[in-house]
Image (cartoon, rainbow, N blue to C red):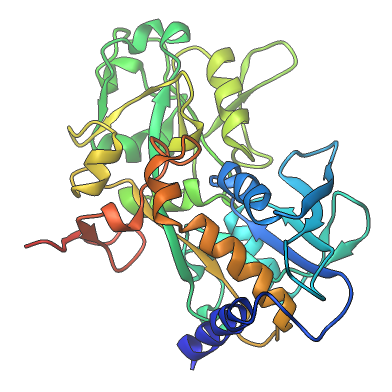
Length: 354
């Protein structure tokens, strides 16, 4: 039944596209996306790709850049235009929870509305949401994750180039209380600090699933004086850019980010395998999972909404885009390039070519 619901969503959009993007309905079409922000650059880029009739406005919330609204037109989509696409990419966990409960999202343009799609590289069961609340997720790409350091700010971590699963567990559970030497660093007294994403983030959830961490995390931030303090309020950061900012401020710290947020930081190898897109594709680097688009099992989308969603889905999964566009390459993994598969978050990695 769940697969049938997903196929109906996809079929509705494809059928309309075959009819020249025509529709009997009239008036504005509104679609709202929530969920993780690891692939935000792809979503924003692909919105401009499908609104071929022109974008009339882009509104970005002044409090959070991952809350934004695009208004424009799809060429030839009679009765569908103008199209409004809202994003509230505040975390995979929050997106799945809000889609399941149909909790309203505050929009960049003011007001609020319920989600139509949740984008997540963490499965509902990992987030703690009943998976029967959703139709089967549609896979779009794979997202790698990494432990990273700011080399210039972490002199005692110069020799820390790799983490084992056990070390990663110790880091998450006792950072701030163990010296860098415990992880191969140069000091027996200077503590090592973890700067983690919060529990609404797929980065946090997927890394925890891969290293089998289930305890209380010991993650750190800084106070008004720039001194390290344990982060006991949010238990982690809401974005990769916030992690990077703390790595630049907090000596001898290691952060957790999606590959798209590595920037100038140095990615650590995991279990002796360096992070690279090629090593994800061949199955040797395990910190990754599929990103999927999830739909409510009970909410009915209009034909126009399905058309817009499928237009964006087709643009995101376009093989040429994934193979050549700089927004995608080096940060994400095309599904067609994977030589392996995995059935669950942090689960076994199985070759698909042997």
